Image (cartoon, rainbow over all chains, first blue to last red):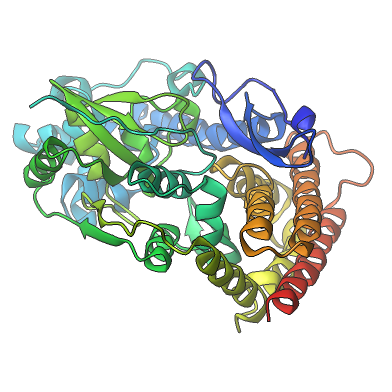
Length: 142
Length: 335
């Protein structure tokens, strides 16, 4: 890759500056060359985020239909599986699974709610609700 | 409590090689990122379908986490102090104490929790390295090698990132250089790095690692659409391209950075033919990029004639074959 071939396709990095590519300068020597991004990377990054958004949408629906507790929604939004969430709240997986059941969730004491809320960066009150409608805007990555 | 260390922050393509080079420069050892990458045997290939990340197979273009930093310091005779913590408070207090003595401290962090990261990069990825170089009240000054300038991060956020959970959890890991020799033998270290990479790429006796791994991936990739269905196959492909290009590789899955190292090594060792090998490595990087472009077109649903899984596999086989010849030639030159 020559310096003039270094792609400058804005996208993932947004306004956070640029990243470094290694490219060959005029004298045939490698130099560190700034890049604003590359369309090929934007495409696959978008693809990864679309998967996250779809999973969150699915969970949003299940929470709204009363099949799962709001924990499932926030968990998906934060790209976590049950195992990872369990590690973050320091509980066994089976407990987290149980807390995803609406009837169990409703009776959870404040101190347990607090642990989930802290991981998701919301207040315990917020944790009990989810947005009325799901829009991909909720999972915006750029 | 406030502290500020004058640190030679220089933006890099990759976090680990960048941190290594920047820390060495702070201790007056001139070392570029590419040189650190080469001495640390950064280049690698592995396709590990039995390890899944977000339900997608792991492909790696670099050695294991921490190995670049470890190998560079070992080969240059640098003493490193490395610690992990149980207590989060203790981890933050020890960081402060070290900063107060004027020593920059490297930390392993989870990228998901770093607020200064562009949102598009915020995944649960626990192997991000950065150097803390100061504190101002509630904020830390951080030399994050993939960023242009020194960034700031709240204490709570840094603490969270240092104690990210999940795969390869950092457990507050921090490290700093304790003793650095004045004039380490860069040439000898570069030679060791070169031989190491060639040997692992050529002779690792497992079919999914090294050059054989590239061909193994090609064979598997060809069968993805049949085995997984079109939709899942595209996810596999997308993940592969992300591993190759997104995770701070400097382009072409680190192949360009390695080509830059080969140029430096040619001068350090006084072996002219390494320049030609650098040129050939550049061509390999270009082929890897061609692979990413064709693959991304497919992910976007805009495949052109000549964009099929069979064609992609063929590109990979070209990469594999060219790389094998390069490593063979390097070994022949050095032995």
